[in-house]
Length: 112
Image (cartoon, rainbow, N blue to C red):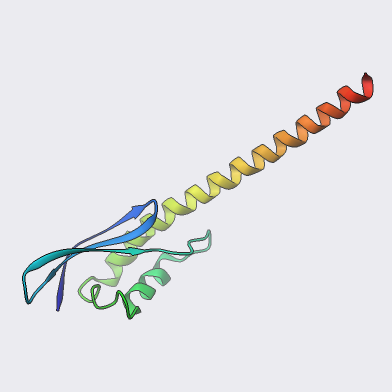
């Protein structure tokens, strides 16, 4: 039997972190569960249900309320989604700059 003490997230890499106590021995442990495949359409409540129903992680999360887990995961998913949007914006700006440089080069080459 496990008793959850603390639950939180890390955003890079996206990870659910759980500090728990093994009731039989009284020892504290930390479990880090990676959150994989986050996209712009990722639903935090679906991710929370996946963790709660997981055969690998579910037994550690039995005592954690699903609403708490959803709220924690929402923070992480939001942070990762913001990074994805920023990355897309940087890539689109660099593509625009490349096109401008190419057009400029064409203009310079044709007038010379």
